[in-house]
Length: 318
Image (cartoon, rainbow, N blue to C red; front, side, top):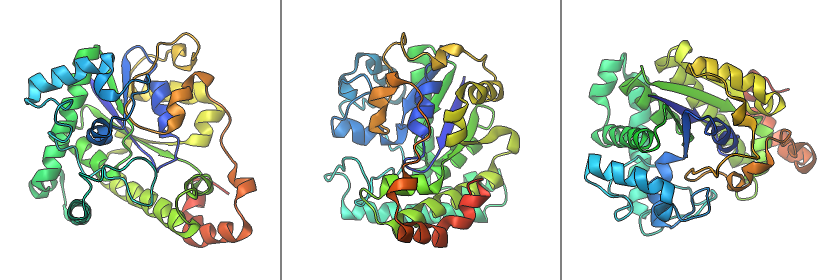
């Protein structure tokens, strides 16, 4: 049993990649596991179209998890702490206002700041485990319980989580390096900017993209050996999906299957959360979304260049 954790900025292509990987007969794409409590509390839909708590396929996972943990998330969505995956008020997606109180948002910021400092201060894995906040450690244990419950309930050998959170990726890896692999998925920041400007101004969108990938690169390089982490560009994946999937399968030590690219005869996927595009995966893999070339103004492009241009070029985008 192995786990693949995908680290990616919002609108970075992780929903598409995880859905494709989830079509492998040995794999299951869970979607965004860190958001499962909110998805259940807000009655959001599984990719099959049913509310997640009522999806017949997920019933087996929740029942297996309840037997292992003593908590039935269908009845108590926040009964297992999975980390501070709180939607920003300037972001997209439904917000659970009853749970996402001002106090909890403040606590999440404090916990995040302490956790980031710990990842940079700790000299080795043993010290990191010792210094990790108890709440963070609990979120890691509970997340792995969900992975294991899904693998058991669905009889799968590879579990894919597209939750995107870089600090959580490191903690998961350090907790169980033999079973975890971390994939850093990147997309041209200008494309991300164009997508996020529906609910965020250009300056903030560029700053968030720049901060996210800088933090991801620093902590993954520090804590995850090169053989257990991999970088993939979204544009490369959609341009040559078979070639890139073969490389990923070899890295994950599973046999490549052409079925991953067959969207016509596959059963309905069952993933939690992610881009709304997950409901139309049957259309297959289209060309890279480069609408930014026509929708971003010269001023917005200058803003992005000032804030994030150097990093964008480091990642291979001119």
